Length: 255
Image (cartoon, rainbow, N blue to C red; front, top):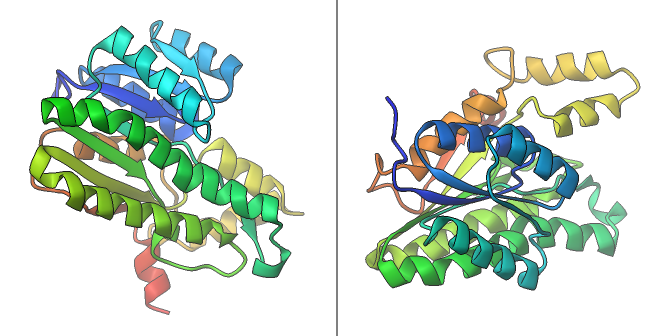
């Protein structure tokens, strides 16, 4: 099937690599117009060129003014934005009492405040035309707790709350808001995390064994799930969280 996103004009954050890059690729392949946002300007420029010279803006999602400016640029380039994918995020893992104030704020600012800044910038235009879909890339940390990962699950639980609250507020005005919760995905962030252990190969093997299927996701697999939620194929799915973790959370709940 092709052209599943024909007519979609999508503002995509965290777009320069990993899951964001994969989502950008699949959205383009299905006929969407895409505006890329990431704070890494050099990598974002490279990605935009790789994807065919896409419009982009280097912006920090925690900066309200920068996101407002990026949204204005997206409207100039694409027309009205009727799709927002909040993919940008940051892993912040500590024991609770070892978490500095700086790391606490970093986790909440990027994973929650940043998503809200983008929603706040996108919603007025969507409400004006009575059409729009927002997808927040959450995590299995949105509903599970793993020791030593504080305050990341606090932030991701809050992101799920944001998703549900906005879905309820704007459902009657033609706006859908959903979340996608990946588990482990083979991105540079995960590779860097494995490499932080004394034995990276053993850390990788341990992670794989946590999954019923013995493997973790590729970015492309998560992007296909995002495609479904951002498309018009699921018009009655609203305020939901689709889990794409290979059964990891089922296994955690069984022990």
